[in-house]
Amino acid sequence: MTLEEKISIVKQAKEIMKTCEHELVTKEYNAARCVICQEFLGAYCEKSPTLICNYWQEDGRYDEDNCIYCGEPEERK
Image 1 (spheres, rainbow, N blue to C red):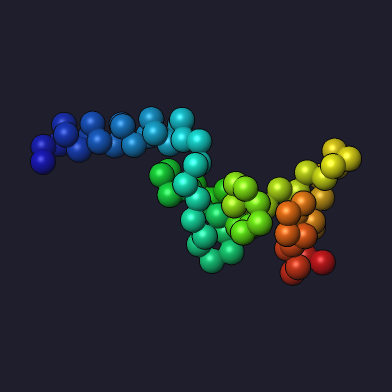
Image 2 (cartoon, helix red, strand yellow):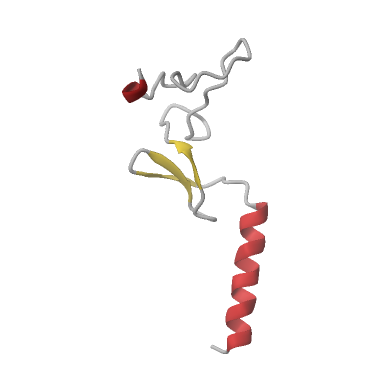
């Protein structure tokens, strides 16, 4: 593989990372990580449709101690 080909691949990967919609999420330890761009997205949540904990409450408050789907993370309570 030539240097130009390697540079092209890196540029393509950077473009994917800029536009990634994080549709494929995997659990890495207790964190959610995008399979495509490798970005850590927050706490992993099996009950959430996005597989990521959501801390925005129904009344509009942000409560980092209470995911609306799983109620965790317990270690912060």
